[in-house]
Length: 528
Ligand code: FDA
Image 1: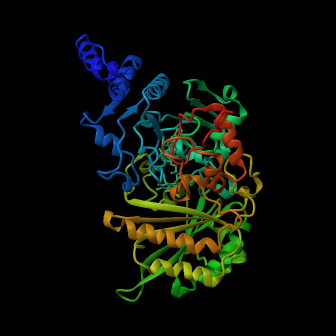
Image 2 (image 1 turned 45 degrees about the vertical axis):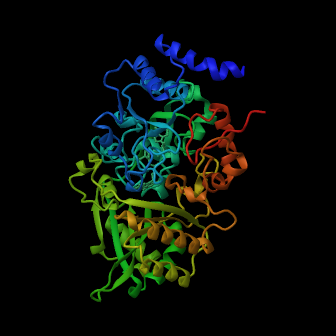
Image 3 (image 1 turned 90 degrees about the vertical axis):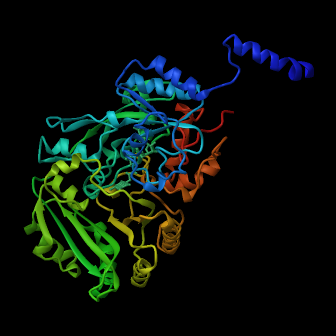
């Protein structure tokens, strides 16, 4: 045996390579050969490093520039399928040649997991799967995963002013990631999440099977509505139920800074915002701003709202329920629902075609975290929170406190995987951004300190978090090898509470070999 190993093998290799056989495994080349044999559609393009368009295709939807540095691991190939069979082929070839598959729809993943991995990987980019078909008669739509929320909103508004969809406020978010993680926005108190309104879906599983609601079964259909993307398969399209909106809605903004009693007004806001009528959504955005004293900074709490009605109804409602805000007519503007999406996105409300522009927003580096607040913060506690925005590293920091209650209270915790429902006063989304890479450490450290500070006020027994703003600080799956249920529970329970167990069961059933995986995907149980 020894003799064979050391003396004969080199000769054998020479003979085999001369005769065309190959003992060396080339997963990259084999993967591409596999794809070229299986993908007949010439419009589906595979970009590799050799292709001049590779950098622009990769960067096209990267929203977080923290993950587009020269040292960020890059995919071996980016596949932009146009047909379902191309998606099946990509799964088949990735599986057979040992590449991890990352699925990308809108590229907004705040931890970059749709286009970064620590193991050899390829990206399946659904940029060409972006049809939006709105059926106003039945108040439903089929929307493909690669469409943005803006394209969906625009598609609805192009047909009717009296239907809308309750999803996030940023119009460049991809439907694929957003719906598979929940989706909370300005219609959330009235109607719940985007994922609460999914009535059918089309997906491809790890075995290449094309499944719809009926064929996938209710367990899997439950899991994909909020249980996380890149865990159960590639969801190509979603059938959603649209919701009624009035032709005219009212938006408002009232800014109060530290010197203008912002803490007192906030203290009142957190006690009543979740109890206001469902037609009224309010949110408080905290950020550092210039003070009226030249050269000084202060912290502002911006009280914003959407009312599904007219100004004349809104003013008396606020004067009765929340007089401390001092809402005046000049703070309010009437507009259509679709314009209100742009208003909350801090964009001009006309022309609404901006909803179709995927590059309308500046791209910066960012880190995000979330909390669910169940007990009101003390006034001093909130003041301390605001003061933290005067520290270094906060020039582009923002916290969005979004009132819950209303419909969110009525939906059972296990209706879909998103469990943060009854009893929550508000969801707190902390975001810190920076432009220069050298500021990353300062900004991320500040964010971690802010999060620590909030530990006294966040949900106590279990610190809940929102999966759609992934936070890898909470823990990650092992890069190589098996991740146990206990290990994944550390973050899984925060995102999904008791629904985590059912998600693990569904994952074990549909993808036992864990082909679809990422840093915080649901791990399957080991087979006995
Ligand atoms: P991306 O393509 O990066 O995918 C995100 C995750 O889903 C990845 O794990 C990916 O692999 C997986 N995935 C994507 N497509 C899939 C598919 N077709 N099938 C299976 N898995 C798929 N949230 C919110 O609720 N309300 C809001 O208002 C906002 N606003 C907001 C603004 C900005 C600027 C950012 C960066 C993020 C938000 N979010 C948000 C969070 C957002 O909902 C979340 O990041 C979504 O996952 C983004 O979906 P994309 O398709 O854009 O991301």
